Image (cartoon, rainbow, N blue to C red):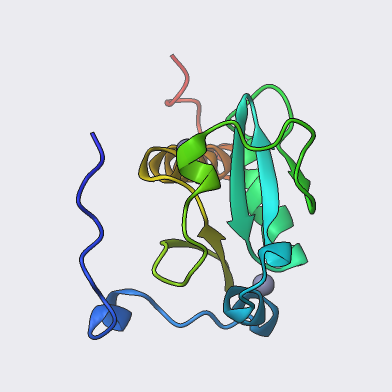
Length: 144
Ligand SMILES: [Zn+2]
Ligand SMILES: [Zn+2]
């Protein structure tokens, strides 16, 4: 069930959202053009996202850790388009949530359901990566 996450947050909300340090990300967000939208292909999901090239790539590679396939990004609408009508109609504006990626961020231009899906994937991917790197020197107590 989609949460009512749509409270108007023009003012005061910035406190919980650190400023995006990456200029390229910021200018991508500010561009109102639909052309700034890229598409993250992850399993059967097609998620419209906005970010700079670098951070989009990092984002996709983290998300890719949660799938046996690789996550791909396209800078044009994929053949067949975005299947989810909610995502197709999602407003492209800065009221959409952003997912921080290092010094940049990814703006997810999707319906609430797919926003939370891709956010979960990203979180899981980060944990996976953390495990991978922290297991190198660590004992095997996390292996079952
Ligand atoms: Zn960036
Ligand atoms: Zn959707």
